[in-house]
Amino acid sequence: MKMPKVSAGRAAGVTLKRLHKSFGAVEVLRDINLQIAPGEFVVFVGPSGCGKSTLLRLIAGLEDVTAGDVFIGNEDVTEKDPSDRGIAMVFQTYALYPHMSVAQNMGFGLKAAGWPKAEIAQKVSDAAAVLKLTDYLDRKPGQLSGGQRQRVAIGRAIVRNPDVFLFDEPLSNLDAELRVGMRLEITRLHRELGITMIYVTHDQTEAMTLADKIVVLRAGKVEQIGAPADLYEDPDNAFVAGFIGSPAMNFFPAVMAENGQIAVGDSRIAAPPLTQPPAIGTKITLGVRPEHFEIGDNGADPHALVFDVEFTEYLGGSSYCYGTTGNGLACTLEAPRGLKLPAGHRTPLRVDTRYLRIFAADGQRIR
Image (cartoon, rainbow, N blue to C red; front, side):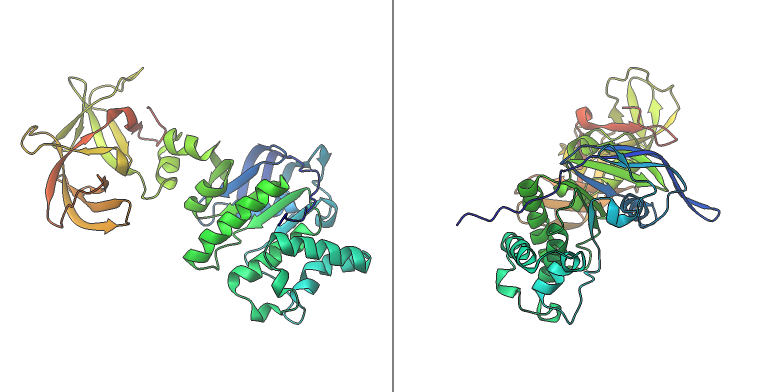
């Protein structure tokens, strides 16, 4: 059966210019510059308190801008009310009216705006078909699961034909299985509607799964902007490298040594080619992702990095071993498929230096 066509707005781009936000003397966001293309799916991600939800609320007009400009399409909306910005927002809490049916909740905004009943019914019906809610239109929110209630909230936004969708941690109240299913629903919805979507989450796995482009924030500043693969493989600094990726990147304090080597405690790792290598004795940090270790040969290299297994997490298609290096540093290793490494096992590790990341003392990446 062919799905009904749900119309969206004009898929407007969003531009932020030198955006600042303060609450009294507390500066929450500073000097945010961002260009979001029409139809792009952009995710704001970062730890709690980094300013990502505040940034979304500035775009929505739910908070006043302290300084800077917000453009939707070519229109400066910095001083406009939320209702005049062509946006629709889906919140973490579903904000559904408990006494209304699903159909009434989805069509409430249109009814309040004076739309004809027949048009409201058609738009609600089309959105319900896309969101697999047709069989639930007469039910009340209390009769629905969390995932169904979230789909109703999304449907309420769809029927308004917005130019930009804004999502503020919409899946955080759902259990793990429902979150995976809803991520697929939102991805499908974006593909079908082709509309600009801006999504806030603290879950970097969600960000990697959904985004065309990720904006990583920390303490009110943008740390890096890029496609998920770019942030994972080519992080600008240690914060982005550690925040993006699950399990997280391993970090080892190290020192540049002689003979083209890097000292990690008593262990030695061959330094990769560096355009401007730090001076011998310079303190650095090595970053190695769990999948970029190789199991070495016992006794082959007395200065090899050794790994003591504490426990193994078996995930079916892959396994992760958690433990410490011989220098007492926490380490996570993705075990080769089929290899069993029991607790208490010690194994030497080689590092694939093609993927070795080196960070200076200030956290900025050298390589």
